[in-house]
Length: 128
Image (cartoon, rainbow, N blue to C red; front, top):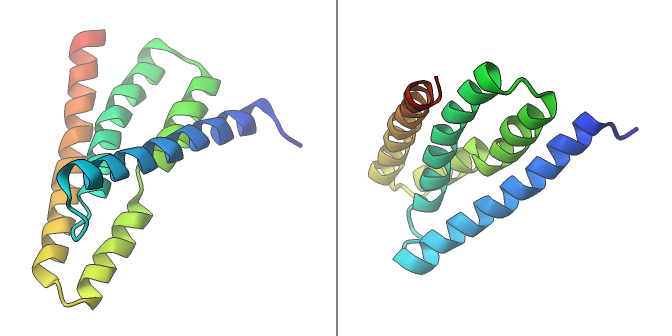
């Protein structure tokens, strides 16, 4: 049985997946980089930043279960993609691209954690 909660997650997931596809392709087309996963890195950093802002907003300002399910679980859950990060990193490792793999791991961890922290701080400064 489809509930409003399930529909919120499904709708957000569909939007997030399309946004992810668009951003990754935009990076490939505009920067011509396809041998390192910069599109996935951008998606994960941007998604981490946005989840920081939305987590604060949805907890302190907007107590709305539908919005939380749509944006955080659905949209950002399908937009950010650690599974793709993992696969692309393993592929770099299996291709003996060790430096690229390590750089991808380090950049993803550092930038995504920093983006989440900055998003939370920014939301707290601007929205309190």
